[in-house]
Length: 451
Image (cartoon, rainbow, N blue to C red):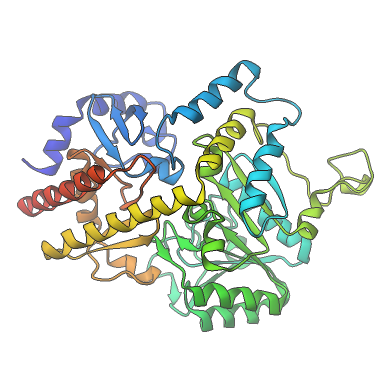
């Protein structure tokens, strides 16, 4: 039986739902990641490390909503905190005392944070952090790494996955809009540096220093292939930004789970500003940005009563958002961070190390061209390349075989992202790792049999 026919046999309910919802929602999903050919799987519920689809199929979930659920689904303590909050309201016109509790937790653990503000998502956090950097420096441009993903605002939807014919020289990447609808002006206002190339990145930053407000980096490229930065690169970017008066911004929306104080603690490199999301909301919508007190001070009012208008005493930078700091996300985040102590994160990372070793061994034994990248509790499987060390190596992925691999894993009860990204959670056991590696072996056999 082929991968596709097995998929169709297992998921008739998802196929039927796709036909229904596709008439109302483009691509049959409100999140583009959740739609793929021939049709996506639709989930019904989740508990711990397992989810069930509308057909009743159970899956070991190694994606955890793209790393947002470090404690797995429906953690009892998180669920209890949400249930306790519900009778008191889900969101409010004024701030709740819960904001202080979560703020104290993140400020205490993340080295760069002296002040912090919450947002509704990681995308919003990056948007406000870059606006803050421009306001603080008075400079118009920002820089990012090729392959770096920082949400969906126009500023940063540049050269996330640029096609080879447009990407430019490897040491001087072109600024390529990620999709239609992004103004051409954004490609002139966002510079692109080559991730992990110290000399080339420094050359670009120095050439534009007088107009450059910020360099935003993921310590580990997420969409770009789960490729860790080298310590040399992050240290050099810190020193270069200091030299040129550029603010260094770390996007830790994904990497905050790598150590108690995030990747910046693990690398020993402290940025000026940090953006966060995912795990700090315990599975509910949230984002945050914070950093040096003098920079965050631009959000403080200056003696007036009009909180909107800096001309009459309001803050230099105004932040809004109806559901920012909503009570449910705060309650869930407080419990989640409380449970993610240093020992728990160390255990997560050991499980991730084990999984990457096991998967690498399976591919080697099968003599299949595939690479497992990642660090700590994060991983990415690339089908086709023989090595993935820099972003442009990801272009060697065999798109057809990668997709067949993704569907094959679903057929054998394992979820990763279509591009092969995944993570482990506190619910991931040794049996789960063994089941994943067994599913990989079976999937490789299925793909080989299908040609």
